[in-house]
Amino acid sequence: VRVLESGVGSGALSMGMLRAGAQITGYEVREDFAERAQTNVERFAPAVAGNYDVQIRDCYEGIDERHLDRVVLDLPEPWQV
Image (cartoon, rainbow, N blue to C red; front, side, top):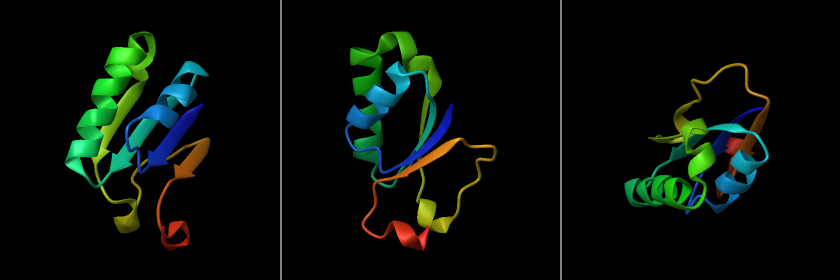
């Protein structure tokens, strides 16, 4: 299952989806959050860390990924995407 998650935060939701078999591309506008999420996934879910790609991106500016199965928007105004 290919998932785009925007607003990855600490990576907690990402880890749950990764453990369930997802391949995740994460968008995060805050570099410190993106780094924390990547570090947390590598530390607490190393077996699935290879299925996780976090980018410093703002999905309000558009989404490049295609052929997604799911999109998770943890944003203040998700209807703007």
